[in-house]
Length: 221
Image 1 (cartoon, rainbow, N blue to C red):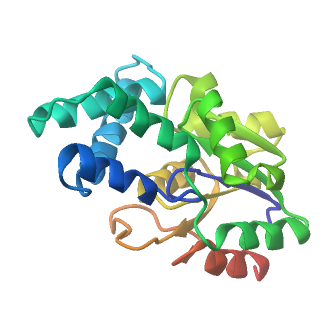
Image 2 (image 1 turned 90 degrees about the vertical axis):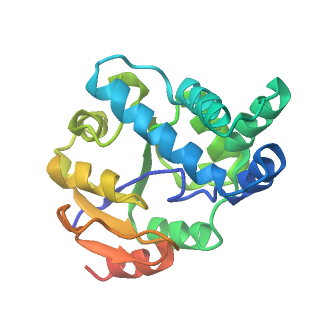
């Protein structure tokens, strides 16, 4: 049983819903947030495959500009800054702290691996109150590639002095889990509301509707 757990951050640990009021105010529709996040993920994949790395914060801002142009909305600088700043202040999902405490108290070593740049990651973990649960927090920034590139998971394993099969990647994104599986990691998928795992991807070892369910299974492996 792997005692090293690697967590994705955005959506997996942190709740994006506080962004919705800002998208409602700026775009007149809170669901535009989904378009923005998908555009952001598309951008991260594009720059990874094209070997033209830009940090996730810059991509997030550019994705906002793209969505604003598509929606024919004049995006004010202050609105842009407010949305990007809110990303640093997202709260954890309600079950996360308790689940992390159970895992840690049972001897699991807990780390992050996120696409967010180091400065944003640090702010997110401090503002969410989750930093205390983590032995270290890793960003993909040093690899100049984004998940699900295999190199990102290999980077985390190297930092920990282990092989990838010695850690379990936990994420609420099927593409993140698929990348981790192909890198040789054990995995756990959090099927948060509205998310469906792609049937064409290799299946995770563990899955549950929230981190509490996933933690239960990890503790019983």
